[in-house]
Each structure stands twice: as C-alpha cells, then as structure tokens.
Image (cartoon, rainbow, N blue to C red; front, side, top):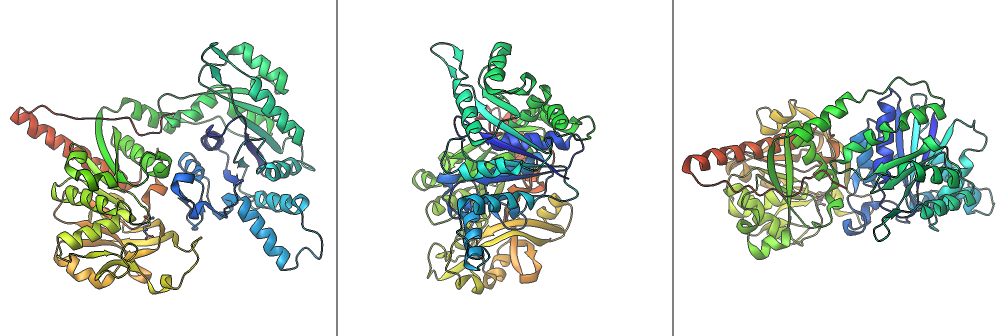
Length: 558
Ligand code: GLN
C-alpha cells in the first residue's frame, strides 16, 4: 500500500512549497523508493491554461496534455515521478466533476454539499494515484492555511487519515520564521499561529519545515517544538540557499529529513544515493566558461512565466560546464530601440512561446538580427512561428507574410489554423496539447543534437506552419527537419547557412533535467559558447578588448 505525505503551507504564500515537495520526492527516490507527486490548487479556474502568465506564471504541460501549475515542472525536474492529468486539481476541476455527477443523477436525490461530496471527490483524486508500484504519494496543497479557499482541501486531507494506520499518512507543514531586522530577531509567533489554525481543522503536523533567512538555532527550535507539539528532530530548517535551487534536497538531507520520513512511514528503504545530484551541483559550482543568452519575450520582468526555459538553460550550462546568464529583453523595446543596441554581445538569442500580437514585430527584428549576424538562435513555439514569418518577409520576398493569429486576412498566411481548429469556439483545453511524435531528418542539426530520428515532444499551441509555403521556403534555404508524420505537420525548422538556427513548434523546455539537459538546449548553449570563443580569438588577435557583460546567473537564486 502506498504511503501518503501531505504538504501544507503557512504564514505567507511563495515559500517554495513546490520546490520543497519536489526535493522531498527526490530524496525518497534517492533511497530507492517510487514516488508520485500531485498538487491541489484552491482557485476556481478549471486549469491555469486560460490564465494570464502575469497572474499565474508558466503553464506546465504534461505528456498527456494537461495544462498544469508550474510546480509540476519542479516535480519533473527533481524526480522521475510520472506526471499526468491526475497530478493537478483545482477547486474548479473538483466542482466541475461533482456538478457533472449531479447532473447525471449520480447522487440519487441527495443534497450535494461540500462535506461529504466535495471532500469525497478530493480524496478520490488522491486515491487515483495509488497503484501497486508506488511507495509514496506526495500531495501539495496550494495556498496558505487560513485561506477560505483551501478549507475543503484541508478538511479532505484530515479525513484521509481516518481508518488508516498511524504510519500510513504524514503531514508536513512548511512555514516561515521571519527575521525582524530592527530587533535582529527571528520570530516564531506566526508559525505557532499557523500550526494553531491547522490544529483547529484537526491536523497536527508531524514535521515542520521552517523557511528562514538566518539559521534558526537550537533554542528557537526547542521553542517551536514545544509550542507546536512537533518532536525536536522534526523541526527542520530550510534556510535560503544562496547558490542554486538544486541545493534544497541536500539542505533537507543534512537534517536527516529523508530518514525521519522513512522511519515515520515505516518504509523499508536503502541508504540515500545522491552522487549524481552532488556531481551536478559541483559541475555548476566549478563552471568556468560563461555565456549570455538573450530571451526576447513579452512577459520579461516576470521570470516565473518562463520558469522551465530558464531552468533548461541552466541545465544546458551544466552539460557544457558553463554558467549561462540571461539578458531579459522586452520584445516591445526591440521595436522601439532596434535589435543591435539591445542584443549586442550576447552569445545566443532565444524567443519563447507566447500568445497575441503584442511584441511580435520586436521578436522578428531580434530573429532577423540573429540570422543576419550569424548568432545562434533557438525559437520555441511562437519563437518558431516568428522565425518563419521573418524568413518569409525578408528572405522569400513575401512582404506581408504573417500568422492568421495576428492578421486574420494576411495575403500570406505562412502560419495558420488547421481546418479542425477553425471550428473551435471554447478557449480552455482546446489547443494541440501534450506529447506528439516527431520524425527528425538525418543529417540535420536537430538529429545531431538528439542522436536519434524519432522523438516525442510536448505541444501547446493552436497555429501551425502552412504547408502551402513549404517549397518556397526550401528554395530559399530553410529546412524542415522535424515532421509529425501522421498529419505531415512541421515541427522543426533550421537554416542551412547559419552556425546554429533551430526553431521548434513544441516546448522542449518541459523535458529538461539538471542531470540530463535537453539535447537542443545543450547544443544551443554549446553553439553560443563556440561563437563566443571564436569572437574572443578574433578579438585577441586584433587586440580589441573583450567586453563580455554577464548578468545574474540563471538558476533561480532565492
Ligand atoms: N500563439 C501561438 C499558437 O497558438 C503559439 C503558442 C505558444 O507559443 N505556446 O499557435
């Protein structure tokens, strides 16, 4: 029987519950256990797919096409847990299911209520992950204890323990110990109150993980233990990491959290093996080479919107023993200032996915600059569509080429909707979503990166390359090196006469891990580093000093 860990959060939001849950998953896996992770989000949207990135950050897509919370990205980067549509439920999705059952008469005339019907539905979503292969199911409850919205979820996880053995279910509460600068003190009161709130609901946390910017110390630990009724060794400190988010599991392991969990859940587990993980961190720490990648996007300044991309670039850096710095560039600024001023000196240019016309002309100007100046370019989803439009206009001579997403009656719809998409009127969950196979052409840059000709990549878009234009693009030097064979859809475009210009209709960033960088990200960063080395050599020969501006490292420092 699978054991259950429920993770709640207290005091404030944005404590890094997703990262902590992912880290716990990673630690249990390092002890040879099979884990699954799941998140409940208390908001009413059925999924984050229709929410603005400004509100929600990145929408993470699973293989089976679920549009989910970005914390699932952490789960997948830290663990090997399989992620499906059953790994993220919102209040909206829970109520939707209950209301549908009510309409089908499944409640046999009873009054449908939060308790027991909504709570039963929530518990059934946890049970869906149970199978014979899984040792531990980790369920993260979004939001903060004390919110009205999260009450049904907390009530459901309280009920979940009823009828189970004491060591089948474990509650972890992640909390904040704020530091008051004026008095120079760490304060435990908010944590006491948050645990008090949990107890009111009927949940006594088994383990407390305390986020703090300063070390908590023995005395405070004892105080927290006493006031919150949590054994001293189960008061764990999670101090801010100053180097990389990938240190978090090791910080928790140092305090024996893995051992505590294994013991409390009565699991038979081997000793932890974190060798690959520590090697990965050592590589990052010792990386000498540096390169700067420009991300030209619409939601810059809100880095959560591109979380998987920035992480993938860090992974690509690790694979190349390099530190990748990111230069964030607002696409609209490129429209105003021109690309040269903003992009000068970068090793590579990346245009990420996006929706709507705003900023697209700036993205195309940046792509043109990378194409003409032979700077490595990597386009993701909209970044591929913009590369296609730019090439149509400035190389193929189709001056007014566009996507029908931006100009419905463009004379040259090089990016357009498929017939079946034209009939769709609802926005939620109606895009081409999830994993599709892609055949990669032998001899292409993509094939060289992947090292194979059959790959599977995840999608989240409505528009496609318009096959009517394939011949004219090919005559002008663009190759279509990846195809979804069943529907003959273009998945990868490349430029032959360029050091590295690859753009993909899918989202490779969802399949990169710190210990296994995605091959296209890895090769893009390699090309950026190669370009830099070549420039350095040229400049050193002519005696011009090298102006390498490197901004902050990319791996989401906290
Ligand atoms: N807006 C484009 C489409 O729907 C691209 C989507 C994306 O970049 N994810 O096709």
